[in-house]
Image (cartoon, rainbow, N blue to C red; front, side):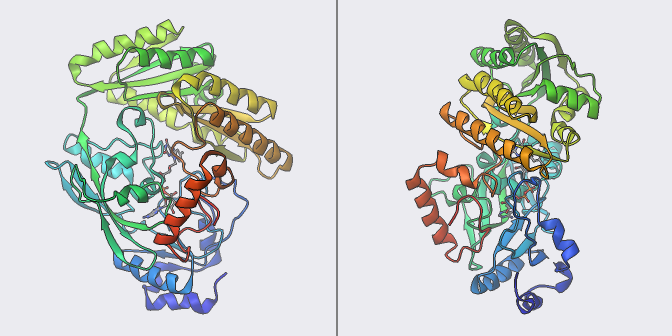
Length: 462
Ligand SMILES: Cc1cc2nc3c(=O)[nH]c(=O)nc-3n(C[C@H](O)[C@H](O)[C@H](O)COP(=O)(O)OP(=O)(O)OC[C@H]3O[C@@H](n4cnc5c(N)ncnc54)[C@H](O)[C@@H]3O)c2cc1C
């Protein structure tokens, strides 16, 4: 808790009508989309920043007074990455939400950090362009949060993640210095790529105040193929069969039976609730290639024992299926007071083993799990519905989580594909990252942020 005098000093830096200090309002900033972390400390103040200079002035003041500063977009990350374990000042970017430039010839857009991903996608689409990164909640999450988490999504299989679409960043360092990183051109071989270091750093190295993003031409056509399976193993086999066909789908997503049933109850759309698993495959490209790609996917699914294969061709049909898939987190949240969505990834060849083991481990600990995932990447999201107030259930959850992580690591995978570390996975990072690499990360952190004011207590312990 900061002295009131230190908070009052903010009035010399920003307009106090842009500052929240009332506990009732600060309470909203003690959490984000995961409620698992044990620390629910309030920040001391929240500032609605409007321009880079506000961020610079606040950081200069915070750095000289060693006050923690936590950047916050929409607060939807799932690892406690914008919680405030040490109090401090939250920078709320919802008023820095302008698209500053859109150049369809260069296929670039320059945006402030508070811009919602959907706004970027829709503006790009209006000129036949495409911004692929699509965390399932892209209609609410911000580009600043996405950059800090290097968010992925269903399209990661073909199109990569946020890190592949950032050409340049303007950031504010812990001491208030404004720094431009990257040239903003498609290629750039001058010096170290410090912008790539900022991407995925969860707000611990610098604060992003502007980003120049790369767009690509929008594929001419798109279809969704949906297939149902009687076992998780067969669904995993379906993924491998598609890969063997040497085509490149835009997405290969998955839902297990619990997810199918939970979603169908929440958002009735005709999903087959008696099936053990469902694969949702998007193909895209030029119209002439659609029938060939569709046939390859259908054959691959049939060879794996799929039934009830359905094809969605119109934009409306495709969107309807994807709404169902994206609704799985909200639907799971109806099963218990809390839901914790995890994020492991294994090599594709181990998908079957990992998916089946996740289910068995959750059964062993009597936990309700709904599994979804971007299976083309080997990325599985076990969504566990539980009551965090129930100590015994929480202990069982921690045991299950450790077993799931250990298995993912033993299969050559890792404990986060796209959600990051935050506070949630901080005690597991040593299981997967070399000690010497963690020491180097700490050195990098101390160069960027010697007083450890930027999002302290996240990623690794200092
Ligand atoms: C229902 C649901 C589905 C999801 N699906 C996916 C998915 O499919 N794929 C995926 O990758 N993720 C997914 N996520 C998580 C996803 O990473 C986040 O939702 C999103 O990318 C974060 O955006 P945000 O604006 O909410 O960021 P926040 O949660 O506000 O912040 C995330 C991190 O970014 C930092 N940050 C925010 N703004 C800045 C800034 N300007 N400068 C520096 N640091 C900053 C914060 O300090 C924090 O560390 C999902 C989340 C939900 C709730």
